Image (cartoon, rainbow, N blue to C red; front, side, top):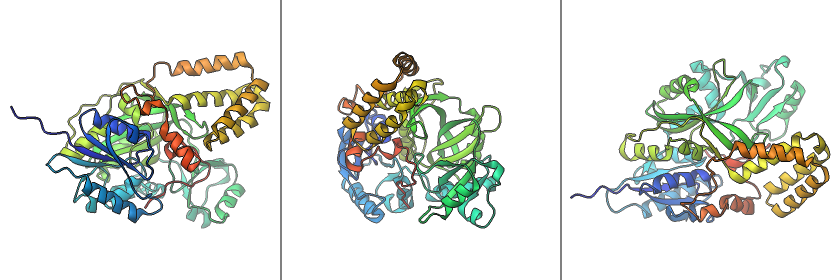
Length: 443
């Protein structure tokens, strides 16, 4: 009796991230040999039982040419000796750089990244603006830095407006601006990045996630963030699956027109009544990847299938109402909400801000002590307890992204968070809100 073909081998990038860990779980449980990589050695993926190997490479944002050289050398070094499938699975901002060098890397491995021409139609954000305008898609009224300097800026009655850098991930650099003078000062500042200025759209944030093959949608699901950390504009730490039907028409039009192949995440604002408004496109995996897999749509495996075989054979039916959480950060989000809303907590708010800053910079013990002193001094404990119980109840039974009984070493805690705090003094990009526009910009 002939044996079944080996499922194959995959190289998964950005091994410090929960996205990479989710990808390794998806592939590894189906027998695919997973090799992780990053520019640091201590990553979540390096501790996973589903990663057979792990290698380091140059940091893509610092030395992109060396990054590609290192990656190609590792691809050649780990190439199977037989004819099994061999796929490169980019996870984060390095996706664009890998796509730009796909022809070179494809000589040794299948590259599961969208075509670079398609990426350039939607990323950076100013490219999406031009594409969406040309296709008459529903987007916020938007002005570029160049348009404003030429005297074609937003009228005063539209303020406050949303300002965001053309290049940015994870909410970095996004802020509100309240008046024309404030906007003018921001644009005139020395070293100011290229910006987009957008009208504020009423409604809630929704995330559409999808897989396309030459512009044809093969799978999709949508979710919303019920809780974020930090609350201002951080990544979701409690998510819920919702119907994706309201968002599909504009997404199919956009990605059909540019013949998209690969995964993609699209941000919308929607009030539940009018047409959803397209805000942003992320040409890669997304922070809520664990959530979409837990909801029944296994994007990493389907992307691997598409890259390895040219087709998607796995059915995908999202479970509406599914919730997942990022356990420790969901608790911090609940505490932050209590700190910022309790009437008797006025005197503690400044302390909370200071403690949160210390937490994100890695001074965990100092932050905990400062927060404990503040709570003891000013918080109405009965009221806080009610709110905290309600927050925890909202996530009861939700799968926890940080803890995996089938992968015990990474279940010891968020090691990738600790590694990032120790090395960079801040949370990893996919979990961090940063009011400044510094980010992993790779071209």
